[in-house]
Image 1 (cartoon, helix red, strand yellow):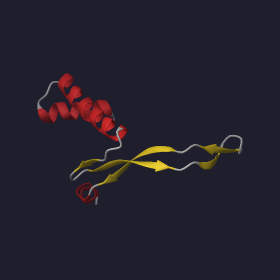
Image 2 (cartoon, helix red, strand yellow; image 1 turned 90 degrees about the horizontal axis):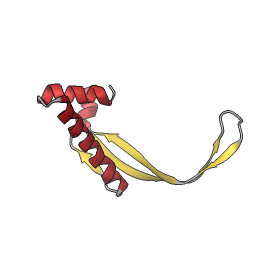
Image 3 (cartoon, helix red, strand yellow; image 1 turned 60 degrees about the vertical axis):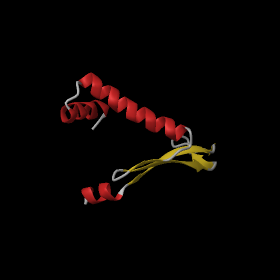
Image 4 (cartoon, one colour; image 1 turned 90 degrees about the vertical axis):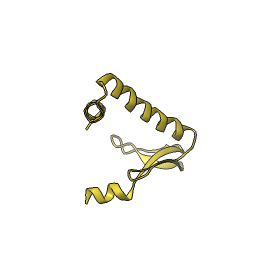
Length: 90
């Protein structure tokens, strides 16, 4: 499912117009992005948690040339599925 598919499902299930559903989806995603940028965790009960973790600098390898390169430290988003989501999939 891509973003357009999600917008269409939200529109159908909520009775919103497609434009309003698009605004709702964009608003939720923007809120999650903003919270993660500020270093906050986002917990959606029954769905899962989004958080930001620090990744240390490390050595990597260029796949084309095989040459070792240094990958800089940085922050990465992490998603952990909630219990209800895990149970729904099994």
